Image (cartoon, rainbow, N blue to C red; front, top):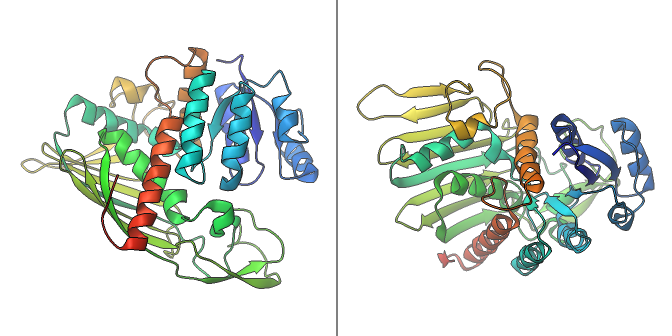
Length: 380
């Protein structure tokens, strides 16, 4: 695995997160590509990388590059992933995989035809206690799933002066909060339980239909600390908040709400799963604790500790109990699973989130949008 080398495309908020996680794994980073030459050079210097690429073609022509990490605006995911796959590179793409299910389905088939590893960066799967919950469900400790409920809320777009390219439908897609953070929640609970969603009902709202856009672009999450600048009004059609109900195959029910306008919540994902044997709950702002609920005996709080979790989760824990692991570690462990598959020839069962699962989330987003528009249940 340590002989593999990756190039990172995207130098904004998340691109450097990929660089750091790859380095911690011992995966060589050949260089980085930003939105223009100046950003590429700046990122190269800031991150101490060997090369600032001039274009995607420059990245793909580099024989040293085994894999490409795409941390670019959503509108570029399909085009860039397609080119990278056609060049025979392994691809790790930020979510959502594409702007629509036609694009994502094509990418799934192309990746299969090329025989390369193709993953979507749903890193939240790789908090060790989410993996432990997945293992508990697989072992039968949870029992039959009655209900799954939860949320993913943030406040970084709370004010109408908060702005980022993600609010624009032509850059991020027709859905924003659902596609950006809601797909994380859906991927996570489906990966834990192994269930499938068979129908959705959704209600979405744009709290700020007009936002005041700075005359220069704003990097993700930096608007809260930026100095006041000159702005211009821009119409926004993507949702700030959404509430969804789900029907799962097998009879389970569920709900989720997403918000990017909930004051004080910086990046909070929560889920609670009600099973016939016990209940489980997780909060990403306390990711080293898993709540286990019982009817006839005291409830439990499991702490992330390699001595306490099962074999599957233990493979993705790097520090002893009491030595907390968090957001950056989830990227590292996601990439660990991805590059283990690459090193093994991309055969067998995959722990990493695949393009097939990324396609599933795009299909779910389209069903959610259709449900909101029609104000009725939509069956998948």
